[in-house]
Length: 215
Length: 215
DNA sequence: CAGACTATTCAACAGGTGTTGAATAAGCAA
DNA sequence: TTGCTTATTCAACACCTGTTGAATAGTCTG
Image (tube, each protein chain N blue to C red):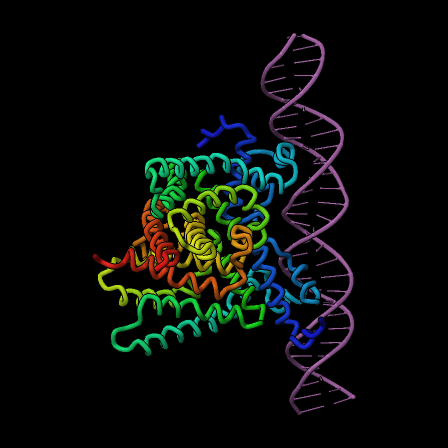
C-alpha cells in the first residue's frame, strides 16, 4: 500500500491530479483533495506548479510528447513497411490507435487516467478549443496527410468529417465510462481496450472507404 | 434583448442552467452565475428545485421525454415504410440521428445546449454511469433490436461495439467544440449539424456492415 | 562543520460557495 | 376588500476555495 513512498512528492501531485481531473473535470477537483490523495500539504501544489490552472496544464503536457512520438513512430514504421504504394487506411488508423492501447495496458494506471483526461478535454466546449490544438494538431495533420494519400481523389471536407467520427469514437473509448458494459449486459467491457480498438479500426476504416472513395 | 421577460422565471433558470452546465460542466457553474444569467435572485433556484444537484437533474430530464418520443417515432415510421423486410442499417441510423438535427436546427438554442449537456454527461466517467441509463437505455435497446434484425447473424458483441463507435461520433458532434473547424481550416463547421449527420450516417452504416455481416 | 538552496509544512487571508429562514410581493379565491 | 397560497427577494450562515508569506525541515556543496 505504501510503496509509492519513493516517488517524489512533485510527481505524486501530478499523478493524483491526473486521476482526479480525469474523473471529475477541472472544477470538480479541489487542490486540497489532490493534496490529500497525494499525501501532501495543500501549499505544495502551489509551490511546484503555481496556480491551479498551471497544474492542470502541467498534467496535460507531461505525457504529450511521449505519446506523440510513439504515434508518429508507429506511422513512420507502417509507412516504411508499406513501401512505395503507401499504407492502407486500416494500417494508418492502426498506427493512430495502437500506441494508445499499449499505453493503456502498460500496467501503469497513470496512462489510463491521462487518456481519460484527454477525452475530457477533447469533448469539452470550454477546454477543447483552448488546449487540444497546441499539442495535438500537428500530429493529427500528419495522419490526415497519410490518409489523403491512401484515399486519392477524396474531398478534403469528407476526410475531415471522417476523422471527426473516428475522433469521437476514440474519445468515448478513452473516457472509459463503463456505459457499454451496462448496455451490453456484460458482453462488452469498456476497460477491454484491445477489443475496443479491434472493433474501431475496421469500423472506421470502412467508414473512410465509403465516404472517401470516388466511385 | 428583453424579450424573454414573458418567460416564467422558473423556466429562465432552467434555460440558463442548461446553457452553462453544457459549457462548463456541473462543478464549473455556480448557482449565482445561473441566477445572474437568468436575471433572478440566487435563492429562487433553491426554492424551485431544491439542491443544486436537483436542478442539474431537472435540466437533464426536462427535454428527455420529448426527445425519446421523437426518436422512437422516427424509428416506427421508418419501420412502417420498410414493410415486411424491415429497414436497412442506414434507415435505422437515420432515425436515430435526424431528430437530433431537427432539434438543433429549430432556432431554439435551448435544444442545442441540451444536447451538448447530454454529450457532457455521456462522456463523463462520473456522470455517465449515474445518469445516462435511467433515461436513455430503453430507447437505445429499441434501436439495437432493430439493428439486430437488419444484420442477421451478427454477434451481439459486435453490434454493441459498433453502437459504441456510433455513440462516440455522435457525442463529439453534440459537444460542438468547434475543433473540426480549426483542424480543417474552415472546410468543416461543427455547427453545421446537417453536414455532420450527412457524413455520420453512411460512415457508421458502413462500419456496422463491415463488422456485423457474416461472410 | 557552515552555508545555501530546495522542499515541505503551517497558519491565515479574502473571497466565493450552497443553502436557509424570515420578509416582502404577487396572484387568486371567497 | 379579506385571506391564503405561491413566487420572489433579502440577509445571513457556516463552510470551503485558491493563494500567499513565514517558518521549518531536508539535501547537497564546499
